[in-house]
Amino acid sequence: MVILNTNLGSLIVQSNLAGSTNSLNQAIERMTTGFKINHAKDNAANYSISTNMSTKIGAYQVAEDNALIGLDILNTASSSIELISNGLSRLRALTVQAGNGTYGGQSLDAINSEANAIIDEINRIYTSAEFNGVKLLKQERLPSANFINEIKKVDTSTMTKLSEVDANTTISSGSYSISTAEELAKLAGMTNSGKIQGGSFYLAANIDLSAYKTGEGWTPIGTDVNPFRGSFDGNGYVISNLYINTTASKSYVGLFGKSNGITNVGVEDAYVYAPNSDKVGILVGGRNLDAVFLTNCYAAGTVTGRNEVGGLAGNFKTTSCYSEANVTGNNNVGGLVGVGTPRDSFSAGNVTGNNNVGGLMGRGDYAVHCYTTAKVTGNTNVGGLIGAINGVGPSDCYVLSRSDGLNGVFVGNDARVTNCYYSSYYIGKPLTGGSGQNVTNVQVYDGDVPFTYRPEYHPVQFELQIGIHSGESSKLSVDTSFDIWKLDTLRNIGYMDSSVLLNTVDEIIDRVNERQSTLGAYQNRLESALDEISIQYENLVSSRSTIRDADIAEESSAYIRSLILQQAAATLLATANQTPAIALELL
Image (cartoon, rainbow, N blue to C red; front, side, top):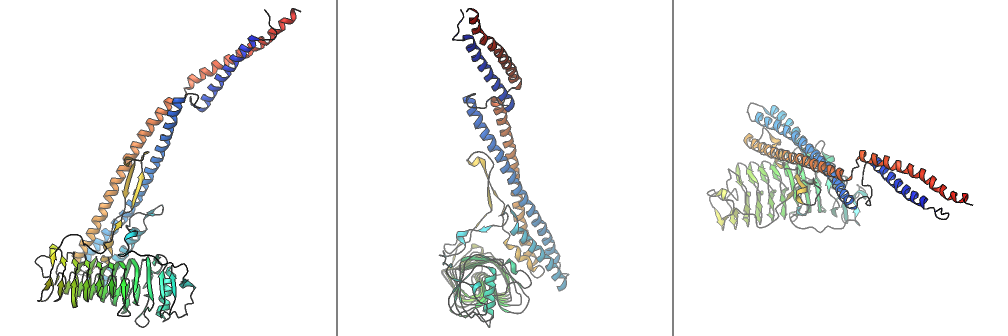
């Protein structure tokens, strides 16, 4: 039978030719991609499994990068700490050398010069060590804990900027904003030339005074002749890196020299060295008017003066203020104020002086609702809280420090003490100097202070994602920071008790070594995490290969088979297409 209209043989050959062509194309695709699963239609179940594996493999690659970056961070921090450790070792050697007692004043000055250079370099490394713009070593104060009282910032956007005021203009009223170190220096210049007779001045930003660390450093705002007569509100901002270094005989030394009241400002990382000056403090030297107060202010750093020396102020009344400064002076030396009347305030650090020396205040009329954790060293009228009292004495105050050689736990001279508390370390020791012992309701207390603000710091922590999951097992918290706030107390090597200085430098060295050891442990953990990531990665890649990768030998055989079938089909298609022509021979 010969059929003309329907060429069944051709249709059969065409169908097989299409199949062999598809098989040939599939073999070509698999050999050129290396995968036997290129589309979900190739193997729906294995395609899903392979895709999930690929996602995890990519995540493990990122986790490996994270761990390597974490190691880079730790290596950077460790190298910086090693430099600090080397400096501290040299500093300790200089301390031992200065304590020998065979060196004259010139030799001690040379030792001190080298020691101060080392301290400056350690502080620089400690402050500037960073990775990708993030500080590594220096602990930061919690933003919510800068001040004792919460501050509602004043809007300064509509105020006149001090930079826009002619420096020769006399200001007696109005409100002005200050947001740069240059504007603050301009305030000092205008004040000291008698141009500031009033007005209100507000900080509009944090200010860094690092640019004024040359020569004698910062020029105080206000002098004995031309005090600052305006009002100054820090507005909750912080002034950092105050530097004053002068051996001249002066009065009123600090960020402010002689000033009216100051509120809501903090001064951090301060270095004030004026050993021949009176009325010396980090924030302000002394007050212009008896009625003015420092309110809600704080200071941190180191300060050295002669008479009336305090961590926050030389001579000032305070309310809701504190100091974390190390203070050195001669007469009327206090951790918070040299002379004053503090309320709701506290102090911490080391206080060293000769006469009228106290952890909170050197000399004053009273102290109410205050506490101190400062360590005090002195000769005459030395008190854990107050050196000498002129008036009613302290009430509702706490002494939580541990100082030896005090004339009185609370007050160095004969004074009245009411409703106060002290550490059990002082049991059996005189509570006041003199013979009166006029104390009422004085108790031993070793608990936390039940009032006032206690400063808090937060460590520098990195949350490293070293796994591919969201749980804690895939994260590592790393803390690279530590505290060396006592370092600046070592600037008087050769002129202070070497045993005290050696204890201080050993304490800092121990803290640095502890942090270095902790970083080493973190490094070991990250290296272990890298090994675990490598194992997981290799296993996943192997499993995905089993599911997804093509067997080239198998695919090449399929390719040749399909190619032969395609060629055969093409030949037979030509024959099938000639079959209807037989019908013409029957005509």
